[in-house]
Length: 122
Image (cartoon, rainbow, N blue to C red; front, top):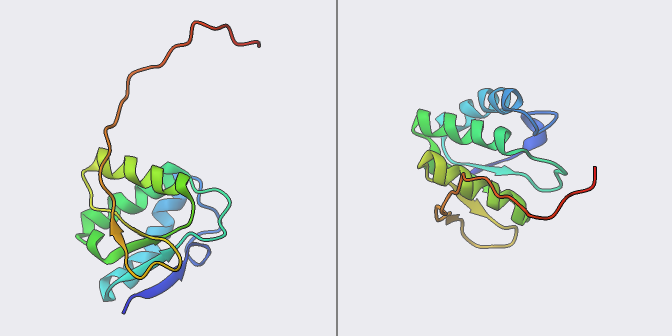
């Protein structure tokens, strides 16, 4: 059975890579013991850089399989899909109330610039 940890137990905010590294430093001890459900519920803002740092370090530790992100926000799932695609990492998510976690399918990452012919007012 996985240990359930809320993100606020690891970091006061979820918005920088540095905070992601600090959060992972606290999360690491739990992952070394076994599976962890990391709850992102009721968190207003979680940046891609924060999440990327957690995913990057979990993968480097060989603990990506033991980490599940619990979220009900499509934007967070989208960020995790992009991170999974860029890093080639296995990322698991679970919605509240779902009986099981699911492996995110990497999506196509497009890095080309998008331009509009319309002028945007300053």
